[in-house]
Image (tube, rainbow, N blue to C red):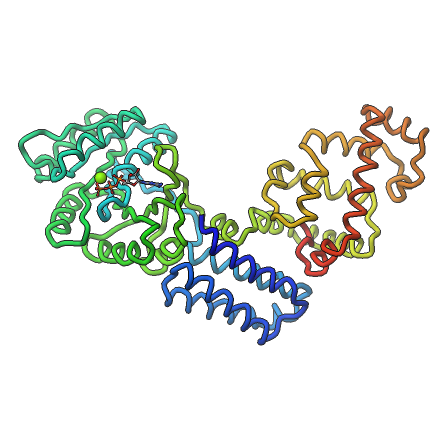
Length: 444
Ligand SMILES: Nc1nc2c(ncn2[C@@H]2O[C@H](COP(=O)(O)OP(=O)(O)OP(=O)(O)O)[C@@H](O)[C@H]2O)c(=O)[nH]1
Ligand SMILES: [Mg+2]
């Protein structure tokens, strides 16, 4: 997903990390790279222009320029603004106060409405709800059969639109709602017909359905592969029938990202889910912040950095960064790092999210799993302060004592010391030092 965009944006971050100071000149270069990357990904040019302006204004600010880690600050600003572009906060589905909540899905032909109905049914089943599917696509003979099959796949109830009369007559619509209410189905998920182009007849029909059903969600289903066309038609649907949210589909394909990065700013509507495959389980909640980090290749690293950046932690990590730079890294520091990682959640999960640069990967390989961390902790805690500060004094008999004290086999004590030595060696490597001086590893 967004591979090319992601690659290019990561180049911008890399460029910034290489700069010790932020100046108008290197900022202009970074912004130029950002602009080109976004335009190439087919992001709406006005959206790009606003994005660039906000980043420029926030970056060339005294607080940033005078900070200890200006490049790091700018990277955070880029990440923040990208999150804003994607909609800031995760927005859950709206449900009506009085059931059934109606979710009505609209969009152009082939955008993935019917498929998404099935995915949504499955999603709300996961919330403990009992959805009912109905299709008001009466024009295409196969449409009813398609949604029946999809309902069958996810074992959701399907409302058979009566034959011989238009299912979208007002009376028929009210009947469906009554049916759902009487049998306690909630939500009622409504599939509608698509058209190749927006035409007045379709809009008329959809407006009528919307007026009668008063949906909790009118969802525009947009094919991300169509880029700005998806954005344009979202706008048209929004202006003519009103929408509450967006689901983007086919983000598993080679969508360049333009639709996802433009549609929120252009329509002012939240993207709530994304389709990432044809099967009913291929629907993901859309998290603007995680998406931004993902596009920037940061995994959840920045979130972790923020978590770690409580005031107290910050001082400590700055101190640690200094010690790392001076190569005074001790077992005591190692223990502190381990504890901090533990505090931030699963270590195995964390290491999987670190960006793919060499030293991080080596770090990921150097450690194994959370249980192992607890064992390491026990071992280090069984050492005397002197031992922790200078591991070279830990001879055979000390190792035996430490093993006994921690209840771990002596081989594990040896292993820990070996890994620690490896880590120190790694820290001395140029790549790692460069990263340290950019402030990137500050508290991660
Ligand atoms: N790869 C991928 N394919 C998808 C996704 N969502 C839908 N599709 C495929 O897109 C095609 C069209 O999907 P439909 O659900 O029939 O689209 P529709 O909007 O209901 O189409 P009409 O009813 O003709 O307007 C199907 O082949 C789906 O399998 C997705 O997230 N990823
Ligand atoms: Mg359909």
